[in-house]
Length: 183
Image (cartoon, rainbow, N blue to C red; front, side):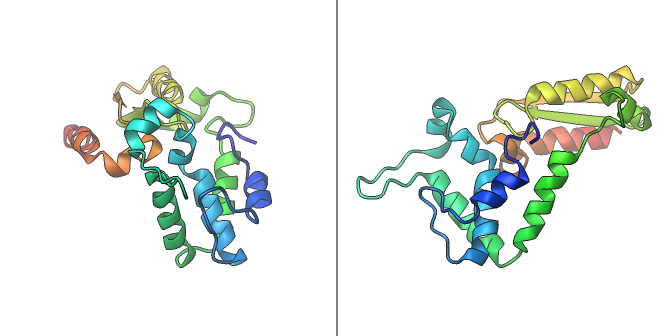
């Protein structure tokens, strides 16, 4: 299990179950839909009520309480079923669990030495729990440690978690554009 919080084994074991508020069309669909549900940063944000109330826009029905995030996850799961093999998400999750920047027994800085002269922008999002801001700061610091003098760290307060780069174009696009134009 990595610091992501959900191992591929965990996802695989849960694919036969339907999370609350999510109905699965068939067992073939289960892997993709459930993996998407479990991996979705927004699912994890549901546990943080102050962020979620603002981000989700709560809409409750007494018969079947459905939050906007559940509809989003259900929609994404159905979209992915026709596009991806369920195993692709398991392998992607496994690759994420096993990846490390640090070479065998080395430090993060050791792994980043090839980036010494590469202009780099690191963007952290306060509500991202998949790649928390403390890890983004650590990455930027390690790049500077190996002599990269062209590191820019940019931190956003967006409420969209890991999906910020997809939905908060108002803040992300100018930052990336400015960095690319400068370098």
